[in-house]
Length: 239
View 1 (cartoon, helix red, strand yellow):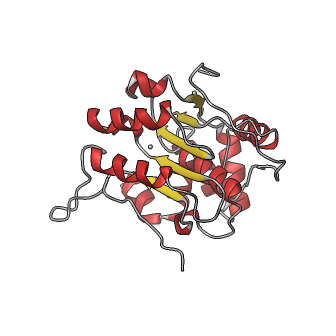
View 2 (tube, rainbow, N blue to C red):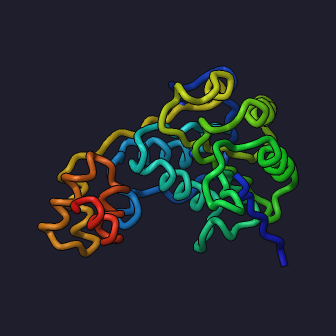
């Protein structure tokens, strides 16, 4: 049985000379999945074209306001590349790096630290368990501490074949410049209220509530989804 690793201790602007691309065979399209992704259709179209033509860059930096779909897009792309029908978290060649919680207080750590990046670099340097691509998503990449960022830089400067890094942040300017310069920056924008409301209605939310949640989301589909699926969150908002 293939072992599964977890790194829970611990989120481009265009072609640049440091970006290394790999050739890939034709693959199924990445189509906007209304049940999972709302808005930013041009982003999915761009990634779809890169995937279809075998021109994926070795490192992407997804930037934009919180809750606009950056992580959803990153995970959707990873699932397509790895051709898995299950959660990518169960795939042995997938690594997620994010801030962890303090064992005593339960509070999130303030930074992503060196040990996390060392562990990820070791995994990305290994042969793929499934013989395909190895993918690493780094959530809140602007929270990499200096030592962790410098260690990651080595992997971005000398990428191994068939490895893909996807960094996620709410601002490119908050990511260390040397890291930023070695990624292709993909910007995510806020979505129109009507588009969010229509998507919620298709998910089964009553039209009046869909309109309300969309209006309160400030163009961030993730917020609207949270309001629709977690009534306690919405109740706290209006009380």
